Image 1 (cartoon, rainbow, N blue to C red):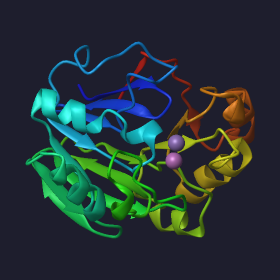
Image 2: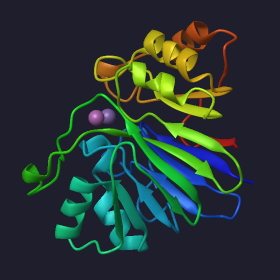
Image 3: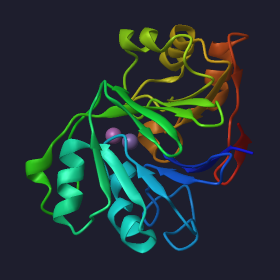
Image 4: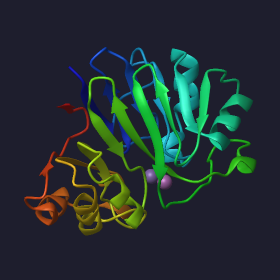
Amino acid sequence: MAKLEFIGHATFLLVTDEGTRIVIDPFLADNPATDATVESLGAVDYICLTHGHADHFADAVPLAKATGATLIATYEIVTYVQSQGIEKAHPMHIGGGWDFPFGRLKMTSALHGGAVEAPGAAAFTTVAAGLLFNLKGGQRVYFAGDTALTMDMQLLRGGVDVAVLPIGDNFTMGPEDAARAVEFIESSVAIPFHYGTWPYIEVDPQRFVSAVGDRARVVVLEAGESYDL
Ligand code: NI
Ligand code: MN
């Protein structure tokens, strides 16, 4: 059965019905929200990135090197990781989709900073993205990534079962805007992330639960917990 494990902060492990293991935004060694490591994640088939900020990207290259996973990201980030010796990488960009062995992945728009935070990466600034998975098993999961509330989210209506949304405020949507995103997307389930890790994003997820009300089921995952898709 497919499941989504919240590693902590913005890092997730998506496991498909067929057992394909996809890590979203690996941030491990310096992540205050988890004790997980490149080693403890075990086998990884794909690494998918929303953007290049360190709290989403810091362990992507080490994880790709350790596991041999294929790294999927915007063209500019892929160009950077290739300069770091990663050969298995698939470049995409916003608005584009691709049929991977695990299902279709489409890169959606996000409104957020575009720096690629890594040694020697200054020339590779890109834009932030969201990730919309249509898995072979039929599950439709949207990772908004770091983003403001955008009208573009209305384009997702009817195409998402589980929406993974930032609620931490300050750098991204806060809980009330994230609840408006749920209203736009009309997913049946919403999972909050990107809160509580540092003082700038100290937000009580119950504010999100209250703001969503009966529009969707909000699943608040503690680091290390999983949701069965
Ligand atoms: Ni960011
Ligand atoms: Mn972030």
